Length: 409
Image 1: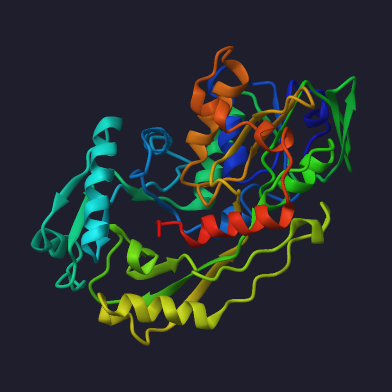
Image 2: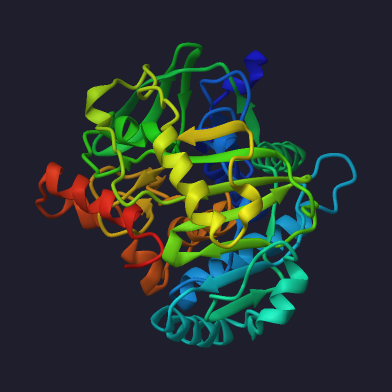
């Protein structure tokens, strides 16, 4: 990284994952190009982002969240037009599969929310679903929701694509750089100190993922940003799978999956999740290593084998694993702190970091640059935690519960 990268910047973004790069991209698109992104790894997208499963689903439980996901899809389509560096976006569509009458009823509500948001979603019968996923057994399925514009991307490619466009617009990147402290004066951010020098700035944006808790502590803020373990596996090639097979989500099984080439990627949300306490490691340390939990992964396999017998006993070639962060209310933490002017949060992404990165960037731009941000953006402010009392252990349990009930109870 050149010395020029350390000239003063209006905005410093801490964290070079999908959220940090998506925020930098959104800011640059909004005309804020005096941006320096700092990442301690030797390249962007190397930590939690590198372990992402690469699905992007737009069907959400609120109109606001649906529109944010739609914005991410629109952004991935746009980035895909670059002839040299693409997010490897593949608009294969997705199937949401109900195994109970209650879940089928919920699908009607999700379809209505999608309609209000302007997202094309429709119910399809078993026969059409079978044509889309020929190897899956749909006999016990009660309903299938089809969203043709959902898709997949390669997480690292998404981050590289953001970074390329950011650089083209004038933003700068400092990798292999460690943040040491944040300098404040009179209740406002003044500079970021790193192992490579001091950068004076007006804003610091905390997009540090599993270290977002520690970066907030640098300015005296305590925020309930809780890392929760997540895992998936990838198999050897399975007959009948191909790169254009749709994604799928099966809420009753708490499973999701996609084709990756001719192999299957299968992940899920554990009903007895494992969290770690960010207070147990320091900013300059890594979170605890994640050891693949074979019992959990085998349970994913056994559940899915009910609908896709071909997965039973198949060789697993890779396990994806990491510590995505969750919040007690399941909402992002986005916006400027009322306690420290210029300190801005972009964290607690509740496993939407990669797929929601463009939408999160859009929210941050609204929070930072719009003199009258909407009610939804205001509801995401870090002030909701700093201006009231809360108990860490209870907040951590609630955040873990958000993970465990990701597809609802």
